[in-house]
Structure formats: structure tokens, C-alpha cells
Length: 597
Image 1 (cartoon, rainbow, N blue to C red):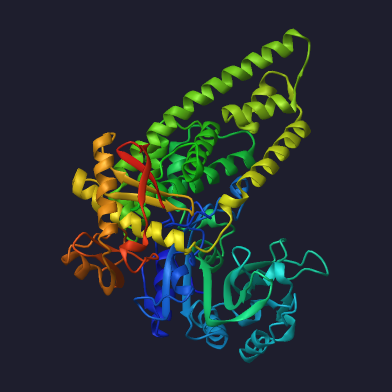
Image 2 (image 1 turned 90 degrees about the horizontal axis):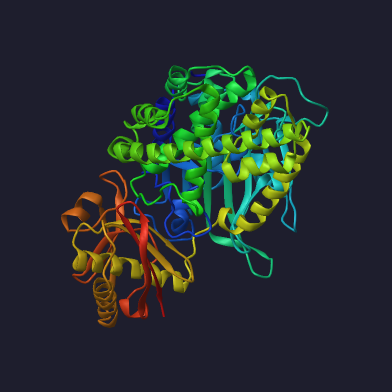
């Protein structure tokens, strides 16, 4: 195997697929555009949804990229050897061009010839057939063409080897996953790729989008068959270098070193020490990428993506106390992360100053909360001793955790110091009930999904272009988009502005948007480069690299923006525009909520 750094792996992968006729494109923001089904970009496919559904991509039908991804569904598992909330996903894409034959052959070639994995250590899984859809014999035959024996090919059911649809209907299809045998002993006679014992590690996944599931539950062949692949940078580097965990690779080395430098004590519990360092490293990396994202708009808060960011920062702060780290550590670690990544992601240097300010403010705020939690613990301990009791109930321990953000481990540590015990089973039961409730409540918000391109959402998306231009006319060029979110019920638009808009300004913006709608202006699409679009006065609010082909939408002489979203053909299709609320989103950022009728 080749000993590659993350930088070398990215370049090796992208270069390989460029040789195969793929255009190298920029990854997108970690904050998705107009997709209410997810809080963050969770996979490389999210920014490419319009093109997977048939819209022509400016760069062609073969693409390759590196996408920043955030997944927080397993946030409580972070601290072990494998789980991360942020990772980089390498991807190659076929938009109705090549299919299984080329994808499988190139995967085998890249793994064995470019990365140097031994073919005898490669195992794959394929779709075994289900719901009237036959086994993927084509993929099996193609893997055999590469020299894999039957003993290395495992047909598995839908839950293992099928992707989608994201909702009740839409594109979907079988996948084939690639695993490397680590050489560890099997856990039993049924040990196979996909087993969680650690013998087989998944390294790559090729999804073959070849069906469309209808509302009647039928699976019809897609007119455009796509290939959607994903390979995680962190996990692959870990396997190539033979490191025991991703936290032992060069990717995390400077971050772990800074944590060690800032730590003034080591917990007596070695496992807690390791867990704390890993949680801080992972959560600070994710928080830094969110706060430095060029799209902006996500700050620590209590709802949606803002809440996830707050939870990441606060969880890092909680565990920093076990290591004796002084207040201000979050900003110091952010500097290290910026230095590590800014050559590839320049936004980490460009937005570092504001990122540190946001981290410092949240860290200080939460330290005050933790102090209150510790005071509450002391009060509970005194009451127990006064009544001759020596156990903190699970309910009380969970209240400290849920209400004050007080770590359960910290409750146990303080209890031991006070000659008290904690009802761990009671705490786990209370926590389990809380998690079940949270999952039920947020299932619709956190599921991965295809972006909504319904008629109403398309009308609202075009309305955001008109709104952005109107804000420039009424408030000035300092009113720049920082984020947007569209559902069938409303559009939400965040923009930079230092103060509350006056009623007169709100009315002027609303009237101007409706004036342009009534003028029935054609919405024209042009394929061009970023630099040419900017020369024409187009707003470009993302980080595509220069030279890439992009879609530019022009609405008369009123609006011109680079965008990949859905648009109406004429402003008259938008309908009546109405602003229903204007409020603060975060420091220096305002938020407008509006509807179209």
C-alpha cells in the first residue's frame, strides 16, 4: 500500500478520474441550498441533485470532486476509534454516461494499482434482490472479470446494498460496496463484509441509480442512469498508513498536539482521557468548518443547524474540563485547523477571525452554564447527605445533563469525590427515553433527501433572486446573501445588514419585487465561467474555482446571479410576493421570511 497524506490522496484520486475523462469541479458549501430535508450537506450527491435528475451540468456528464460533509446522527458515538461528524468525501459521477462496467473496473484499478491494496484483501457486497427486483448479477459478473472469486463477493439484502429513494418516491438503485480485510480474526462463522467486528473495513461505495420508485410502489427504469460514488478521505488515509484510528493519522496530528499542549491534567481514567481528546478534536474541526463556510448564516443557537453547531462547541467545552484546558482553547484549536486546511479550503483563513470570535463567545457563555451545573450538583449532594442518603438518582443525573449540559462522567467523578454513588441504570433509561423522543421529533429534519424542485419551491427560489436584487437597490450593496432555506410553505433569506429594517424599507423591497414580477421579465440561463460572469456583474456567492463552467441566471437588467437551483421561465410565474417577517438571525445578519401567493 502507498503511504499517502490527505493532500496526496485527494490529488491522486482527482487526477486518476481526470485521466478517465472527468471534469474536476469544486465541492459545495456544508450548508445546503434550499433543501429543507437536511441541516448540512451529508454526502457528495446533495449539491448535484438537479443534475442527477436530468439537468445538464456545465462541466459535462463525467465529474469528480471532494465534498465537505457533516453527519451528526452518531454524535454520541464520537470518541471511539472511527466516528467523525465532519469528513471529506471523494466522488466520481456519471450523469447518464458510463455505468456499472466502467465504474467497477475503475474502482478496482484505483484501489489495486494507484493505492496499492492487494487484490486478495478486497471483498465486495452487491444487491441480493428484493421486492421483485432481481439480484445484481451484472455487478457480480463485472467483479469476476476483475479477478475476484465467488468467496470475495457477497450478495446482501436491501438494507445493506440499496440506496434510496430519499423520500417515498424518486431515483434509487442497487450499490456495490468495497471492503478491505484487515487481517484480524473473524468474530464467528457468519463474519462477512459489513460485520461490525472490525475485520472488514468499508472503503468505497458505488451507487447505481437505475430505477425510479413511483407513488404506487413500482420500480421503473430511469431514462438517465447515474453513477454516484463515495470514498472517505480520513478512513482511507488511516487504512493506507496502517494507523489504528483516524485520530492517529497526520490529518489529526497537529490538532491532537495542540490539545496536548493546552491540557494541564490527565484524568485518572485513561479511556476518558482518550475520549475527551478525540471529541474535542472532532467537534472543533466540524465547528470551524461550519463557522468559516463562505455561505455563512449558521451561528450557535437553539434551532436546527444553529443548535447542532452549539451542541458541538458545548460538548467540546464540557470535555475540555476533564483536561484542565483554560478558557479560550476553542480559538487556539481553530487556528491550528485553519493552518492545516486553508491551502485547500481558503475560506478557513478568510473567515478565521470571525470564527474565533464566535467560538470565544459561545465558550464563555457555556462555561457560565457549567458553573451553574456544578453549583446545582453541590446543592444536590448537600441535600442527600443531610438526609443520610448516598445515591444520586438517575432522574437527577439526567436533569444535570439535559438542563445544564453537565456531563454524566463529570457527575460520577464529583459523586465519587463526595462519597456518593449514581444510579447509572436510571440515568441510561432517562437518556434512552429522551433520545427516542428526539429521534421521533426530528426525523423529518435530519433525514437525507433529494432537494424539492416542485412548482411552488421553484417559484420561491426565483423570488429569492428578485429579493436579493431588491435589497441591493433599497439598502445598498452591503446587503449580501448569507444563506437561504425554502420549503413549500415559505422562503427564508439571510443577508448582511447591521440594523433592523424600517417598515418603509420592508415595504419598498416588497413593492420592488412585485413590480418586477408584474413586468413579466424572461429568466434567461447562460453557461459561462465564474470570471466571465463576474465581469458581467453577476453575483457569485460560493467558492467554485475559476475556469469552471457555471449557470448564470439573468432577469432583465435587474438581477444576475450564478446559481444551480430551479427557476421559472418568466417572473410572471412567481405570483404575488409578501414579506411576513424581518428579524435578526445573528450578529450583523438579518433574516426575511416571505411567501408567494
